[in-house]
Image (cartoon, rainbow, N blue to C red; front, side, top):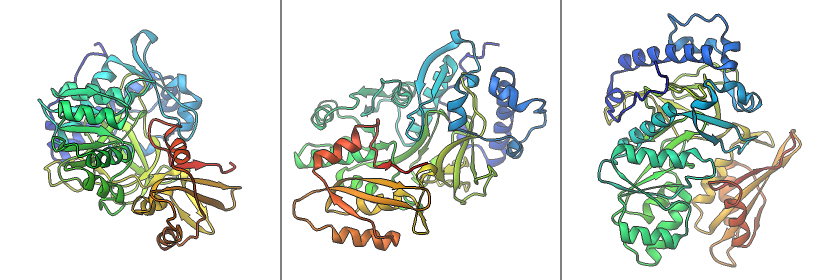
Length: 431
């Protein structure tokens, strides 16, 4: 059998299966995935040894050690499970918390990727005949931009690849081509929406914003300050997504907008504690994913480094697949300040909702005993006092954090020049 043969279509029937039917489907796919890993991946061949997968169940996954970014980076070549001539695309993970990892995709994996994003877009209401403006790069070995493009096409919609471009350029596209949906980073889409309103440019054609890279909900599943600003700037629904280059799978909100749906035939989701033990639904831990039906670089129990929680109750949309809640923070970004454990997102929430703040970033420093944080901001108007913002931050975090005003140009250069998406946390702590 050709392992690269296409087996994906946009039929979403499996997303609406009952809980037991989903478990049976995932169990069958998991056994096949584990067998492929042991037979073709040098790393997992050594790890799995004499494991018997004939009666393996999803609950047995906890018997297998997790794989994290450090292992994937250190032993990168050992994870490739196909001959060189079967690799069709080479991409790199963003490497925001360490060395970038090479990710190899076969023809099967690219087809799977297109199916993954088509199903995600469909759950957000995009369909044949829709025009979708992509405001993200498709080059620079960036897999997400390619995935969005292929997903739109596979769904039968029309992709408009304007990429990372100026506000004026996107405004022209919206005026001329009238896209019904836009895919982009929320903080950029906020700027774009404000620009359109200030210049009296009609954007009512846009009915959906598919938001990537930044969460739109808080840990209580309420719309975040950033999400509320998007709703004010656009006459459109907003949909949050979650994905990473390594797991090759995305979780996209449906019309109920209460968590990103897992494509049940593409991945198994776990939330684990520090020791890699699965946590119950609703418990906060590290997002860990076993991507199914991957052939080029298959992974088992990949720890993403993101902190979140799982929702396993059936959704109002009719899907029974597990959902992922908002990402609360990066495990590597967790701060310990004067005995208080906190994630940078706690500061982001306050800064996003502060009308005085135009842009901002945080720097963390320290020697391992206690962390220090300093906030750098650009103000919307000169002469605004920062003490009101500082009091809000103290009320939310119970911490007094120093703040410094910088010119807008300096802050934006810092935030937007180091990655494909905005970077607002800079870790200067000593290991």
